[in-house]
Image (cartoon, rainbow, N blue to C red; front, side):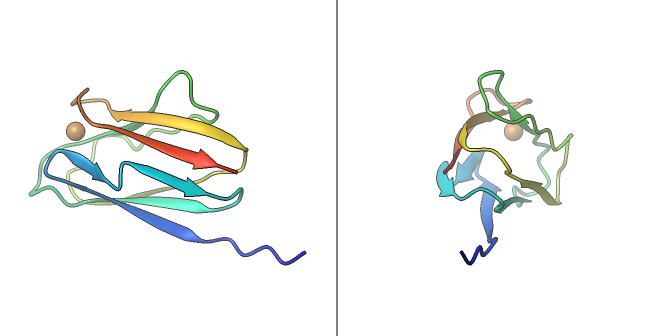
Length: 90
Ligand SMILES: [Cu+2]
């Protein structure tokens, strides 16, 4: 079986994750691009998430995480609780 690991980008802008829900495969990397006019954000997995990840506080640049387990990963911004996203890994 040929396995191709891919990278998917989620852009952070206007106090939102774009797209907010993404579907990836085991081994894929998700890169969050902090592009919100210098505003601080922090991508952090919810307790219910299959895997634990935390970008730390960033106002620019990117954060990447490779998903190695099948499951659903809800996440929020640790600074702005209204910002929410989901990474579904299959
Ligand atoms: Cu935020």
